[in-house]
Image (cartoon, rainbow, N blue to C red):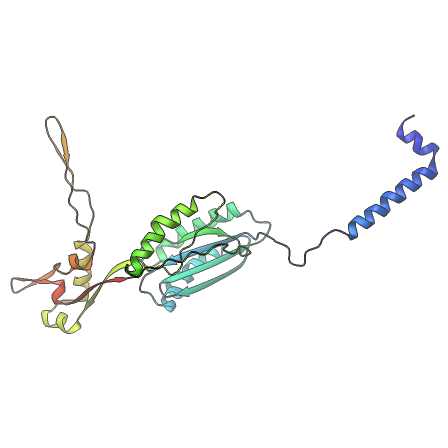
Length: 267
C-alpha cells in the first residue's frame, strides 16, 4: 500500500495530518524573527580626490563638480553626495540594490577617466575609489603620539609601516589613517624682493619644478661591462631648496633663499 492509496482510504487521518501541518506552519510563521532595522549591504562606492592648498570652495567647483557630472550618467545611481574640505573631496555614490557592485565599480573607474581632462592639472594623483558599506563602522582605533618626532614623521610611520601590515591581517577589510599630515617643503616668497629683482612668481615655480627631478641618466657601455649613470636630482628637505638658482640678474645668480623663506612643513 503506497502513500496516495493510504490517504484515499483514510480521509479522516489525511485531514487531521493536513490540519496539523497547517497549524504548525502558522505558528512557525508568527514566531519568525523580524528586524526593524535589518542589515543590508547597499552597493556604495566612495571616491576621494586631493589637491593640496585648495580651499573647500575650489575643491567643490573644480574637482567635485566635474566628477559628479560624470557619475550622474551611470545607470543605477540611487543617491550621490559630496563633502569638500581643505584640499580634500569625498564623493559617496549609492546604487540600487539590484546593481552589481563590481560592475558599478568599473563604471565609476571609466567615469573618473573621462573627467580627468576637466580636473586641475596640479593634482598629485588621480581620484581613487573604494567599495564601502555605510553600515560598517571601525572596530579598533590606534592613536600614535611622539614627544620628539614631528607629526609628519609619525604620519609616515603610520602610512608605510602600520597601515600596510595591519591591512595584510586575515579578515581586515580596510585600514584608514586619519589626521594625516604628510611632509612638504613650503616656499614663502616676498613680493617686494621679487619686484626689486624683476622676477615673476612663475619663474620661481618653474625653477623649483626643474630643480627637483628624478630622471634616467643613461648607461656607459664598455667592452666587457656596462655602467649605469646615476644622478640624484631629488631635493629632500628645505635646506636643499634654499641654494636653488631661480634666475640671473646682472650676471649674478639669484637663489631661492634670497627671495623669501623655505621651511620644512606639512601639506
